[in-house]
Image (tube, rainbow, N blue to C red; front, side):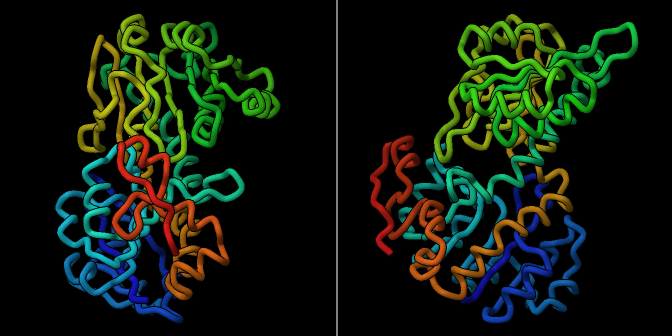
Length: 368
């Protein structure tokens, strides 16, 4: 296949889909075209790609038109819709359950769209995991910054000092993001409470962190009681492919202390609080304040650490890109059945049932 890697255009999105080492693998049996400067935000020069076997094109238009397999990081933005066309394979993060307009574009133009966030291997999400790990770690880092007085926060040091209590960090969700957030919050010396409905997940965290955290079963009462005493709330709720449930209610936020912070890591899937729902922010304008509480809802948190994120993402995604490009989608899906769970749109319809249900659109299994 002809593989195209355009430069990401989302606000402050410095990641690129593929690293030179992966290009060297892909270029053995495929043509690889990369937009000029696509890797600069991740410390990768055009010359690095050329040396690995890629060709550099001057514009996004050239890359999109030349390639039949588009390899990206983030979902196409509206200015990129013009490049979508029938028969094209798009391989990227999609988050369609919270983006009806893009879903309809992909369906109308009969694009085969494979979403990193729904590819499921033995109950795990291997293409989402590396970015979830980074987002969880960064959520605490960003939350700690916005707790400082110059950033409008309560003026609290996360770990406190001898004789002064540490900040209370509440983490809703004990999955990959929640585990990453817990690791950093504990490491910084905060008082940490983790909530989840999965007792096994809470047990796992208890075994890892022992008496350094407290765990609670996630129900409305426990969430409300925890949130209103929190200095920093990190919401990490994920239901693969679906819109995130709003577990942090507006009335809970009203009870929080002025200058407290909420970080919504589920914003890509529509947001998991009443106030951040459908209100994503950006790295350029990362926060808004309501009821005296700072809300951080950046939709591409790992983009802020692009050098780390790019290498982690490419390491995870290249395997399947190589398979699809060299074998075609049908044969690649036979060798790696998990690829089929990543197919979100196919031949003019939604091919991932949870997305179809959330968007009230027609679902058909991808007929490969």
